[in-house]
Structures are given as C-alpha cells and as structure tokens.
Length: 104
Image 1 (cartoon, helix red, strand yellow):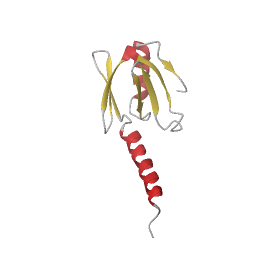
Image 2 (cartoon, helix red, strand yellow):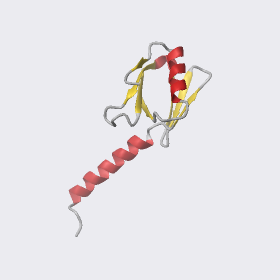
Image 3 (tube, one colour):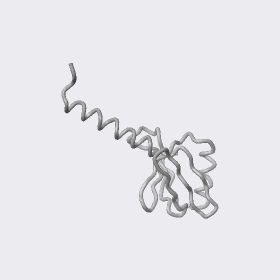
Image 4 (cartoon, helix red, strand yellow):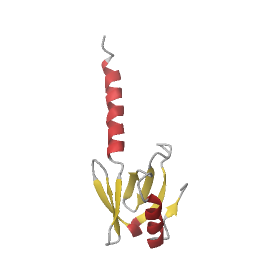
C-alpha cells in the first residue's frame, strides 16, 4: 500500500531542499587577479569582491559540514575540506583584514 499523499509531499520537499543546499555549496574557489574570488558549485557560480567579504564561519545549521562566507550582498556556502583552504583564507585575510573568522 502507498503512503498517504501528504507524506510524499513532505519527503519530496526535504529531498528538493537538500539538493538545493548541496548543489549550491561551492566545491571550488578561485582567487582572481582582479580582487575577486569565484565560488563554483554544481548549480551556480558566484563572484565576490574580497573587500566585500564580511565573515567566514562554520555553518550552525549543518553542524560545521560547510563554511558560510558572508559578504555585502549575501552569503555563500562552501566545502571547508577543499585543497589549499587554509592558504586561501590566510590570503583573503591578508587582502581584507576586516574579515571576521569565527570558529575557524
């Protein structure tokens, strides 16, 4: 027997939200020569000015499985296990000393 229709909708909504979150999490970050970084994810890419970055911190909602980069126009999630992450964060902090590093 099939589950009731509303249960299916709830399960479908949970799957869609998880795919959106995971698909929007950057899996590659490029430091550009023009003072910006490019964050690439399976669903989208975003360019953020280094001087526009406000903070970098582990995600509370995802128990630190991803980091959240907050900037002047919003936020971007990224995988903290990327190769060279510590060097990248150090370089971002060097170029923009106002970046708050919380819990890193």
